Amino acid sequence: RRRRRRRPSVHAAKSRAMAAAQVHAAIAALYGADPVAQKNANDFLVAFALTNDAWEVSIALTRSDDPSVQYFGANMLHGKVKSDFASLPATHRASFATAVAARLDDLASRGPASALAARCAALSSDVASG
Image 1 (cartoon, rainbow, N blue to C red):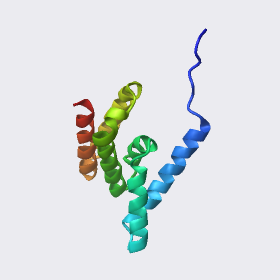
Image 2: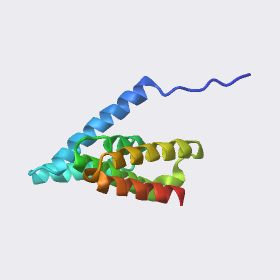
Image 3: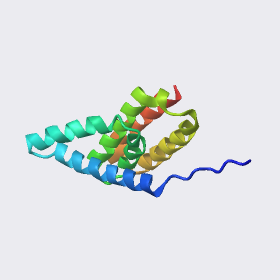
Image 4: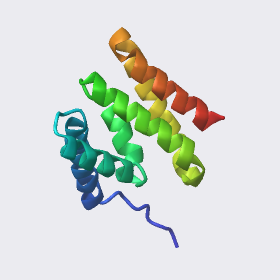
């Protein structure tokens, strides 16, 4: 009896897209001028960083054209690696390392404007392999 591979559900993909949009909005609020919105955004982002969706969303954030969003994504990724890498299933670690390596290559090709994001992603990669 053969096992069928489960494909990620459309619902899960939509959920991650929605989470990414919420994170983008929270980052904008965090850097905005309204102190109440900044606090709410910070609370949301801290809680979101603890979720499983934060793995993929943090990598996606590094694809942004906005350097502050890139940095935030790289920083979130670094935090995930430092605090949650051991809990990442072994079957996902190789694909995660591949995704981080691909982001590093892309960020490095963008030049000095993305140097900080690239350094944060490199640090994440180092922690993951160490």
